[in-house]
Length: 259
Image (cartoon, rainbow, N blue to C red):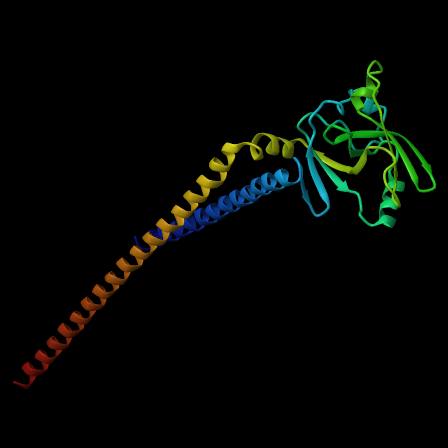
């Protein structure tokens, strides 16, 4: 019986530890998600529907111009960036601000690279470079969307001429080079981070519930501590009375012996 009781007590302690770890993991996940939502909403409002971390912008693809056919990408296995469907998040390496590094950045761009640039009168465009012309420090890039290249009936190109040591020679400015993409991040941003109700459901309400949880836990822990303290005091009192009783019995037995 004693061994069974000890085993049950050990199992109970282990379960509590596991539940405690699970609670903290869930809270940590919620905290990370909340930081993502808050940062995304704040930076996208201040930077024009984009958010930037350590020199990398994240933007959402809004049109299907970069959705080419499977055969098109099969014929270009060298492309690092493939199709970019609508609502995909693209990660853009921002162009350097230093002129010498900017010149090197322009010189490194090649056919097949995907870049994001400001197009006159519209939102930033993300298209693939299909032709480059480099004359000293003047760099000309002809760009087009994969869907437009793949569909010969819809020819549409944009030509950008830039110089790292002077102003752009067209009404377009390169933002940076696309280094990666993620449909999952795009889903989070479009369907979660940009929704107004998300602030309440995933931030305000969880923060309130987590705060309430810790407050109630502190109250219950305090009450439990007080109960344990009272039980300890009672036990001490019982032990004291037992000791006094034993002492009285011993004293009485000694008196009886002397009589």
